[in-house]
Amino acid sequence: MIFDSHAHYEDKRFDADRVELLSMMRDNNIGRIVNVGSTLDTSKESIDLSQQYDDIYAAVGIHPSEVAFPIDGDDSNILSREESLKLMPEVLGSLEELSSHGKCVSIGEIGLDYYWDKEEENHKLQREWFLSQLELASKVDKSVIVHSRDASKDTFDIMTEAKKRLNTEAVIHCYSGSAEMAVEYVKHGFYIGVGGVVTFKNGRKLRETVEKIPLESILLETDCPYMAPEPYRGKRNDSTKLSYVVQKVAEIKSLPIEEIETVTWNNSCRFYKL
Image (cartoon, rainbow, N blue to C red; front, side, top):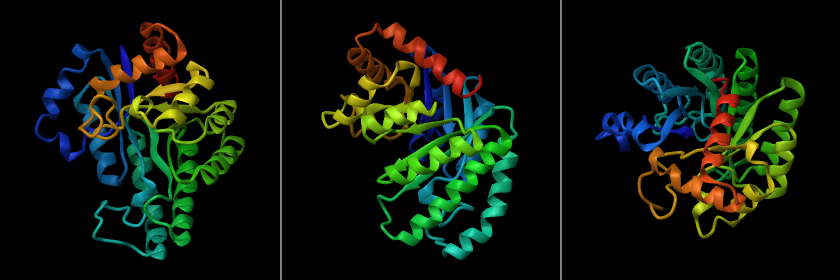
């Protein structure tokens, strides 16, 4: 069976067939899924999904692109830095309450995203939220799911310090950095999230990463509905398409598909304490 370590089934793109799709996962070799929040609303929805399905677990957190409107994820309600920081205690309190649910297994996704907003003031705000949520994860004894886009150095520096100071357990989700940096992450005991990009023609960096790090440090993920693997690139992704990622990792590692499934399943269970 395959463990999808990162999905977003609360997304509206699943509204038409969510129940049907999630009810057929075991028939398609998908044994467990972690549904990951990005706002308070989607974090609550992740908890709700985990209550409805035995094989779904939840992560709760505020995505870096959401820190300017962290209460409801409403993109039209853009907050100033001061307003966002003023709301932080309330949001962290809500996340802490959500994290106490029996099927909440991680804080995430949290991190840094410098791709959309190039302003240093916003980057600073993201870092403050990132650090605060790392502290929360340590407080509630949960691992973290880290988003990092166009922010490799800052993410690495923050996570290196978090490992030293908080003994943080983490997966670097949808990994896009260099193979050399991935090796350093693995030295800290962190996991690397591998999804559909590994099958892309322009996914050379991720394939190099998979080649250089131990299989025991890889978590398989879809990030669905995003990042569908070839031959579905550009279409809606879902957990059943992880078989294409498994095939590519098996090819890179020159290992049987069954071994890829077994080792990455055990990795995810260990990381999420299941």
